[in-house]
Length: 155
Length: 330
Image (cartoon, rainbow over all chains, first blue to last red; front, side, top):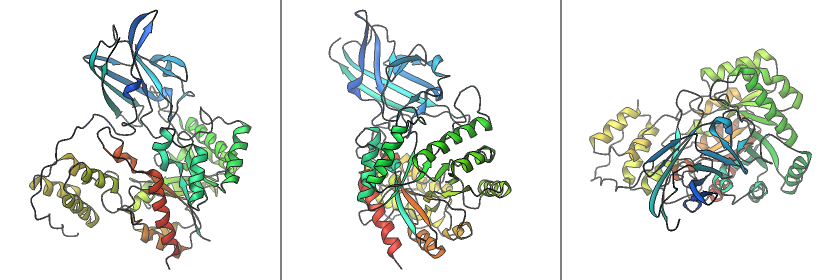
């Protein structure tokens, strides 16, 4: 076996702090544009918020392969239903999507996640985290997460 | 007999994701490089939504573009989805049906080879052989870390190919198996984020020397360098360096190469993959076929905290400068 090279003989400065965001990395930077987070109205009443998501993978996936989507809005947490996902103009529950094996969440196309936050987002600063996981080939299901901090200026 | 060059559209994935390029734009870039081969993933750059559906007008459009930009479709990267449903694993027959759909798609668009992912059960491939023979499209097992050129999975696949008596099966080595040091893109990311450049290079030297990762990490900790940026570099999860000499006995089995790379320097050399030695061996073997650039450096800079990103088109250009230089060298 080769001999270990000599460690640099110098003072090693500590790595400056930087913010580590949670989850996997693929497309995290582009996955959830902050300017596409919106209030959702029904009959003039705010019923929740929505965000547009790009697929956190290097290709599109059949909808049946979405293992779960998890959202944390401020202090509220949601996983799958009662959230919904709108793909190519059609809205599906997560229970429905488990059998949708020929419809794709296409690479580069936004899917809209509706999160039924009671009363929607109030005025001021908020934090939204979204985690997406696809069915894995083993027992491990890995999530790609994204964090957005946004200021709701009007409701 | 010669090495021919191409590009996998996968290399431009962040441009496709943001719709900054389309299939015609990808072909234009390949043509500008003076290359002809095109490799792609059906589900990444589908001709129409809902892969693998195709209409005759899509096929006509594709073939017109190939003629316009002098493109040769080389390899379609097929996917099988054993976990299509989350309550059960697909049967081998169902997975073979997925491969058959890919074989038809490849045939319709003029691809001569499909890539079979390295984790696919040989039984699935065996069931798809009649379709491969019908469509005249070969199936190549991707030899990608953690697989190796002489590992059990590859031997089992080649035995199955011999027993079947077909000439439609072979191998598609990914240049990731010729990586010697730490991944170039991860090293660059670590330096940008504030890791000490000398420590980063030291980790790389240790990896090239074959020092066990546990020992590298122990030494790092002893010097107070236990930051995740260093620990991620000292990582052999997807590293399985193969001596290029191992390619020689596989000459007739190799259908195509995935020209994996992570970071090209300005002088058009790759940071950690042993391209020079592989090209030397391939030329001595008189291997004939396509090597398509597969840039995968995006993995380092797609995190939300990362302040930079690479120019994918420039990275591929540098890769082709290097490959053309290696082909031309005596």
